[in-house]
Length: 301
Image (cartoon, rainbow, N blue to C red; front, side):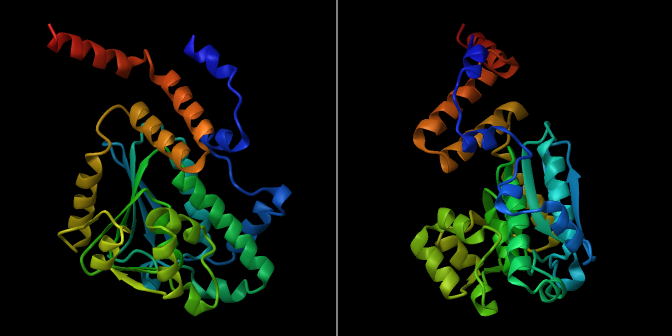
């Protein structure tokens, strides 16, 4: 009955985007030609974006270009999209940690690519490409955490805002340096930053190009916690343990909860409520629900 009701529900375009993975913000109707942008980005090699999927249901996404403080080359931008697409189809996944290799997060864009792609048209095209990718990352039905070691600068700082939570090591820093480069955040970081810390704090952080050390970031609500260890391996283990407390349970339930919160954040109240109802219809009477009811009934005897 619940599933038949779902078919009669009217959904807005934005609601459909949240229901459906693999849908981007921009397409040819917006003047965005993805294949053209990909060809340009392929001209700038270096580094990689690596994905490891753990049996615990946690994915570990690593920005790997340590000789340039994990700056995004063109190829890394392409690989980030590829990894996000992989995660969209990982039905057993529940959580995600985004980190940088060799104890630093990311210094943003590789300046070689920035210099070569110097026209306003190039800048806007890359902006649309990265906004597409990071919005899809944000909407993944996985509880996501940015593990910030070392520096998260410019575009690297923007990537942290695409995650649900941020954890920092004691000596690390986050800094939106865009003002000093004569630009604004263009990967969606400013809009997401407002949602995280509010418009007043966001304005201070952006216009002041403030250096957010771990204490300052914790004080303004940018991060959830400062980790005990700064060691690369130990801090990753700490981050995994922190995340595990929020992903206990069946994947279908954790994923539905993340979708429900995403709806509440991005949709108007009426649409968010409809989406919440529809998500319930996929779980009510399902294996996890029936098992929980049986377990409760056993204890109540």
